[in-house]
Length: 237
Image (cartoon, rainbow, N blue to C red; front, side, top):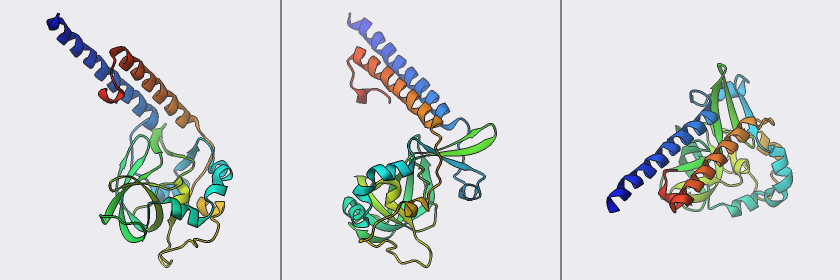
């Protein structure tokens, strides 16, 4: 009996690994639909590359939640770390986010043990379709440009890794001749201020397809894990 259990377990783990690989391939194909390329900011600004909003528009997001964080001092109070930082050109594109290295130039709130921190930006997806490069962003969030200073309101995710407080409402570009604190903590942050650094539209097709595929994969894996009496952490995804 014991001798039969070993091959059976191996077969089950091989099946799990195969499903995980297939699932990853499907999700990657849906997300990228082609070759992943470097972020081309100039092409965004001159309209050669379109950045589309996925899901609700930022306007709707602002109208629904704006009263809760329209004051700069509120965003300040909600943040573990507030800095003037310069994003490096070094980043990692992930399926649902960007892991960006940011140099800390000045700390306005909190402390950081390192001069370089990791900032996780909201989902931003690039793909090639029919020879045309396109970009899609959740809630119209535009990624930070490298080598340009920003004031960043950050919440700590784990050691030396941060997320941006209230997404687009937690990052503001600083002009070269601008003061280190471009926002007055006592004033209301307007929707137009936030939109100055964003490109928006209303297409949600790609994001919907991605979520559908993701949900199907997770449901399938959960079902398999239940049958095998495994915990989620025990399988490859």
